[in-house]
Image (cartoon, rainbow, N blue to C red; front, side, top):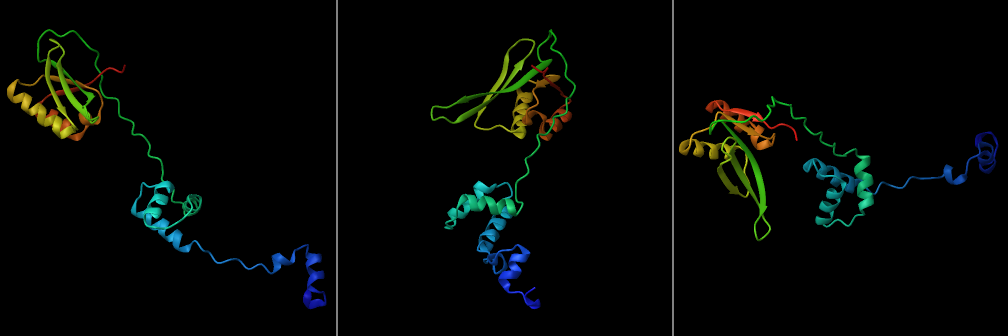
Amino acid sequence: MCGRGLSERRALMVADMSASSLWYQPAPDRNVALRESIVTLAHHHRRYEAGMIYLKLRQQGQMVNHKRVERLYVEARLQVRRRKRKKVPVGERQPLVRLEAANEVWSMDFVFDRSAEGRVIKCLTVVDDATHESVIIVPERAIGGQQVTRILDRLAATRGLSQVIRTDNGKEFCGRAMLTWAHAHQVALRLIEPG
């Protein structure tokens, strides 16, 4: 319009536009280095969310605002997807029945306690269902599936094994180590009834 003889002011009025919009120059992006740092940290620590990224930046000596880190984190689409809980397949559950002889069915579970200094003690307890005798109690700081199988091997050497072991569906009892051990020793694993 200015080329057709209208003044700039008159052309802006006709176009219903402000002079500041016409002459606006965008400011340079001052977040380039910070954005690169956030992306690098997010790829290095995959499960970190914006709060942990902010903490890491502060530990590196960068003085940044947590809201700015959050905004750049979201803009870069780095949000961590929530993990879905794995559905444990419902195995064959058998009701409790009255047993006649010892060493037919054992029940295993963990009991937790704390030591005087406040550390957790995890006790593996094995009970004979017929006699209600405590077959073994093993206290440890942590017991995994491999350790459970080693404990059962020691028990087999001194006492023998039951035909069936009843457990809950904890990861120590439903893991690969326990399933492999039960198959090798021809011991049937049964899950407890819900509730």
